[in-house]
Length: 389
Length: 233
Image (cartoon, rainbow over all chains, first blue to last red; front, side, top):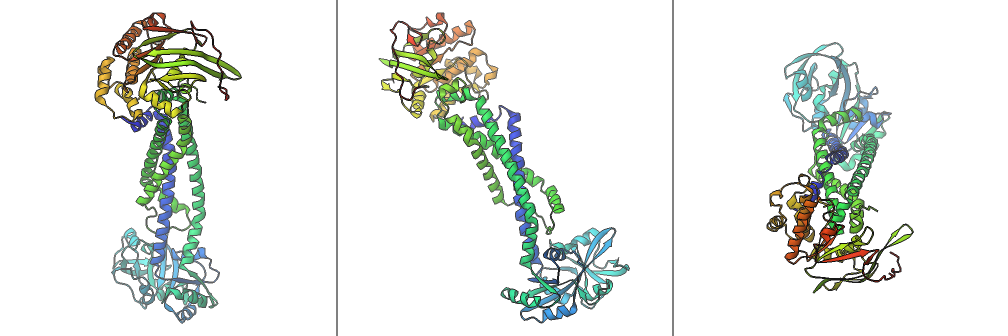
């Protein structure tokens, strides 16, 4: 038997009250852990997704805000276009190693939107070295052929060789290849030869954006400056895109952190109140313990142990609940944030788990300090008489 | 050989603006191994005296020595050490921890004293107070007399030289109280100094000496005025 045993047993006295306090802490820690996990996961997946695009700059039509640019990267369609003339000017800029044109369009199939990328394999494939295809990739001058993403293929039960009606006129298209999973948005897209896509959607000579790769990352500012001089073009760097997206979700994050802070303050007030009630009820017992040899240090240690046990249990339960409910939480988060990268958003970093448990202990210490201090300095005689003040 | 000596021991309390003179100059010598009853009417100062003798409180003025060591005006940390090493307490309300077993309640002072949790010693004490068969029970499963025996066992576990009891049979029926007193007498025969506050004149007479208090003084002694320290109480 030791003080820890006594602290553990003391928690069993008012089980309902202890469980409610633990539940309060668990909810606060679960929200905190989820937010931090999602925040870290979001940033990591976003960076990964930006890297997977394989280019440094995106040339988009002038007047296209950063928010719209992020939509382009995610398969969104905007009603403004560049021309093949713009593409030629971009390619002529010194330091540009590749400039890959893209035409993005959307078709509705069975009520669901499908994103179509018209690409030039000769320029796009070098930007996507991670792409692996089951079957083959099309060539630039083919028509009525397509490569599709793995998720799309699985959902639509399509394999290389499948023929599907496609486009506004329902023309027969042959699936010549299926991309292996990329864990990015590419898994959901249809890829067509650029010229064929322009024909299919009546956008001859038009492109939505140009993905540009620099020979050297040091050249990005000068290439960007030269691109901006082309009248139709606005340049967005991938760093700007990442920053814009992080800004977009940042406000939601601030709001959530505020909610968590309030939840934690309420929980902390609840714990402190519970402890004060608990020591008030046990004033005579504290007096007895002092009479039989307990020092103020023992009493403070006992109460702090009880508090830390409560908050630590709350922390553990909260983290388990957060991990168990992460799937549901991710669905909710994806529904409310403006841009969600592909892949799992929640990352359960062991360091984060330790940090959240440490936070629980710190919360316990902070909440327990005042009740512990008051109990420790009680006069044994006054305490035996039941006098709390 | 005296184990407790007091001289001119005074204790004042403040209740609002009123000063209560709980003890007014008590001179007392208690020998090692004595069995002393402290009696007197309510408000006579019995509990105040016991609290001072047990180092739960400090005197307003006067001298108190335990084992020849003056302890008046010492800091709380020194008083804790004296309580831990020399004194055992038994209270009227038992004050057992409801979630600890009988054996754990008895062993609790060992934890505070930083001593090993000696189950052999706890078993021996439980035998002495007649509760071996109840070692694993919780206080809620015990009778009033059994709870007080647990409290006595708890008071004995640190091998104190002095056992102080404040109305130890106040919550017990006469038969149970008789059993508790028999236990006290047995402990006294083993050399333990016993100081018991009681209202019960029959039980008080079983002690070797009765100290009667009245209005904060030992009944037969002349009244002394107490001079409070500059800080007041």
